[in-house]
Image (cartoon, rainbow, N blue to C red; front, side, top):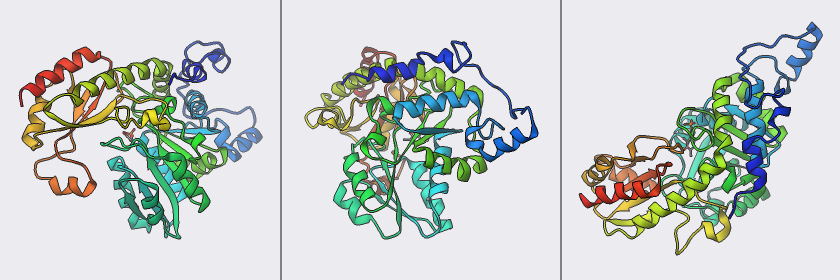
Length: 386
Ligand SMILES: *Cc1c(COP(=O)(O)O)cnc(C)c1O
């Protein structure tokens, strides 16, 4: 499906001169406080800090440009940017949850999000994980005190796609808020708020920033929920995005549509190559036939992060393949211009992986922009060494 032309305009910042006093590139407003012309004005600003530039731990004009664009891309009323994706996730939890509340996580969930949920048990917030994420299993996990349903779709490591609209509708019927981590698909390929989800979070360190040079996060929701998060968690937890990092994020957004088109095309080419390779047992990519979840209309497009299982699945085999790669770099994170590789496998963690529902021999690839030919040749060489 083609990318929505309206999204391209938002990313490129058509008409951006209007919000930046004529500057084509946004100014970096590197200030901590803002001065007022009268003390009464300062007092009024302090009373409405979520929409007034008083101090850069609250609002900052450069950060606001990034926030307006991300809100527009997600078709949300408001966005708040954070120092990292985890700061955004922490803010959602700490502002919406109280002792006694329960959270249900559906699908394979980003590891640190679950670690944070475990930490919250100390404060009386409990949770359950439904790793498969199918609606009947999620419904069974709901409790009277379930306050939040947390979705990740496609999920971490196995990239299974959820029926987001059905899950959000079920939660809404029970008065439960739904939040979704949309870092993988980006708003270009999936807009959870239009599917009935209440809050979207992003690690902007991935595709939105897009160049592996900034750590940032965002929450998008209704103006009322973002205001609640602003006062309860953002202003007080202090996980603020600096103006220069916001500027890097805006710069990344400008090329998001072209990058995502290329990531999609090259990742599909690499995934198809791997699916036909005898050393590969399985490829986990939501755009691959025969049961393409993307084609089923659950996603408007697929990004560049996916995984595959080696037929010989020992830790030594995983190390041999990863270490033989020359174009892929070995490292965490994803979404940049360089291709990256890692595996959840460790020496002797077979039981833990099984408990999490992750098969052995799994290798995760983030397809950068080197071109699918070079990446396929690299993988061909590494797999020949098995
Ligand atoms: C990286 C990541 C995060 C956390 O983002 P940071 O910016 O690293 O804090 C959250 N969710 C997903 C799916 C991620 O990949």
